[in-house]
Image 1 (cartoon, rainbow, N blue to C red):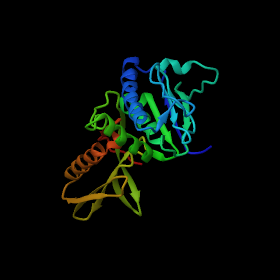
Image 2 (spheres, rainbow, N blue to C red):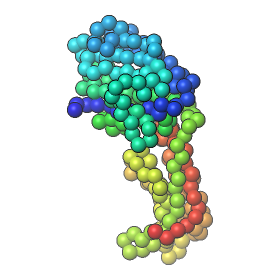
Image 3 (cartoon, rainbow, N blue to C red):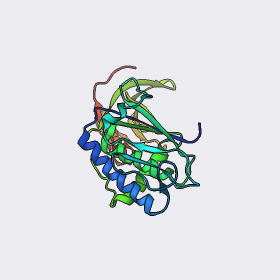
Image 4 (cartoon, one colour):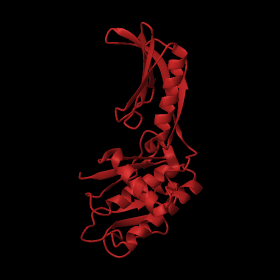
Length: 250
């Protein structure tokens, strides 16, 4: 199919929030137009920025048209509307990694930053493609506008303590009940003869550990470090985090 980005829009998204997100995307498109990278839908002329946005790379670096509707409900119009199990409408754009690709990922990252779980995105380039797009959008919009923004519709991730068996001995393990590529954070406490060893790891395999004499201190350390690592990662800007203290056997 070629290098492609995918997205799903909730047609019931708040229209005012959607319009605000689209306004930032217009600024991104205007930047690409001034740079001579973006053109109209067929690679010629100017991008459309009224009544939604529609653009392509400037020929001969054009590939497939990228478009976002003027209102979220507009995604329900047309003869080939594809919905997922949640009723979100699916769309995609093949860019072939051409120069206009960064403007596509910047727009998609911007929409997600504003709309959270109402705008789902994925890519053949993985989350790294949107990380680069988000950073590019921040540069255009100024002063990390999107990265520093608190999203009002954060999706909550629930972590829960449990007792597991690892290599023949029991450990107290903090793990998420919703696990995906973005949320690879965990903590565990080894039960030692003279105390407890607490460790917290993140997606980059960076581990922070410390020994404690009592379990309560070890648990508090793990939760504090997990919150810190999770919240400092810009990829988690659309997520909140809760931890359940109910210990349970695996």
